[in-house]
Length: 514
Image (cartoon, rainbow, N blue to C red; front, side):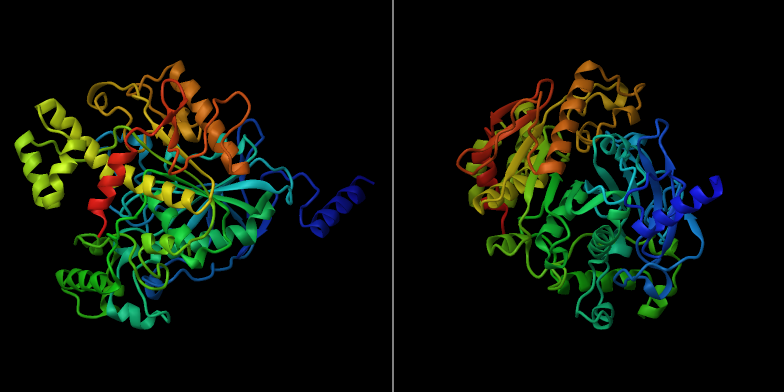
């Protein structure tokens, strides 16, 4: 009788596609390419699948090609460890970034197109909201295996958390006339972005098997990941793949992305520096050897295919994907070396000419202390603040819901890390409730940090679920508009405020835009 009952359960499970039967983590799930199994967290309320292939390995003849369909496998693939991070230099702590902000040293490989899923759903077909996380790293480094990108805490809030890998550096963004000719789309260079699109397509096809809702997908990223989110919102190739976006410190609204022709010229120079004369010879080179020469173009290209025009122009024409947006930047993420006041004034004059005088009223340099602060604020605003502010205003003016934050927490730290304040990437562990990953010997966090993480993770989870960060027991986060630039300050105490530097960001954009 017991054997008959077990057989009936197995038949019912297959017949319903796992829709109504609670699944242990080691029960195989069918995805594109074959069946997989995973693990579960210690408390048993989150199932975890790491290293799921979403495309064929981009090696050999597939190096510098659009991602191809995943290579099928037989049997059940145990997805219990992260796949390799994309090809890049060996990670090592620098600046404010200690080990928990970096990928593991191994494995690193061209064979890197894997993703990971944390799901709270016990059955398929639960239609839980989905978050797809895209890492930063300047388009030349990074990977989904970083400790602060763990998805368990977010999954416990009723969200299916997906983190993805994509190609970086010359493997993700090389453009060459030969590559353009062979592509079938008269383009080359944006392989890293195409990897992200392929991962989102995988989510649409497969996430229901993990209890996720393919009609409620939020894409999120930080730094180059946020710039990637900006590109995905802009590209017609990602139409219908998501409904909301979280963009943390990064966008591209100053028309600084290179044209295909400029990227091809940079690619030809890189190829010559390697002493290579043909594409076939270049594809035959070991990956490690290709890393020895620096390539000047390392990020998204205006290629007329993935990006049919500059992002600002796509948005101005209203041709971007229409989504709800949560975006912002950090107080202390400027990245410039501090110069003496006279040198700073000369730099402004050289860069901005006749507009330098008015710009100096927003970034004064009367004393060394004032000059130092102005330089770090200008660097922050040029790279992040003005970009994300512009995105917020454009989306709001086109009647999309927008929520803007400023992360201001002076993160406690000791020794060499004590001077960085609310540094670039510092907010990520708070937003995804991953303070447990932070090395407390270097950063002695306290109850203020715990409270801030709980509030930020609550805001993020609410937005992922509904497109609105507000919820019970949280300070009210106002909608942003160009006329009313309301933001949420995320710091020692979370509170709404008016963006006081909106006018200088507007002016800075006017002098930066080509």
